[in-house]
Length: 230
Image (cartoon, rainbow, N blue to C red; front, side, top):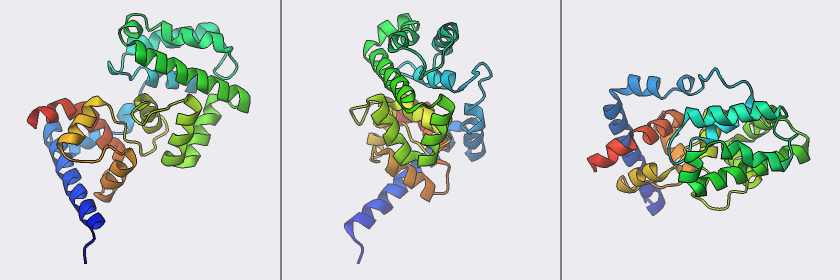
């Protein structure tokens, strides 16, 4: 006899299949979807010299979307201070966010959160004696679920809906099967009656034979259009 849980899983899988079909349609077909939102397209930033700068890059993926100008200012400030994360006084860390200038003032709650994440990471690296590259390896080895939880604890993430930029770092820097959820993606999931649980979304996408990173990027990029479809 079919249980309620298996019926729900089957229905969620059907809904995810329909969402992926719509993402393909909005993008221009399955080949286009796989190319436009591929891992390779999301790791081609030649200005970033090291793992510290990569982390700052993803912090700029806040409520305004990626802002290369903000990333460049953080990167320049990091280079000016010369010492890497983990070997820097906590007092220097807020400066890496304040140089975002107008965007930090426009979204003060996000800027405050990003500063908290950086402080938590800086302290963890200092106390553990790790550099950022070794830290990346450690999180990657733990896998997405355990690695994500470790990162959130280290950075002081306290709510389920906080930390989308950290999930993007896990997905695009570490190439782990993360599914970041922001306000637009959450709205799309609500309309399609899909769970807003990243782990469940990853499971559904993999069961359908797709790369969860590709679908997560497409959902983030195309969600306004798909939401307008209803």
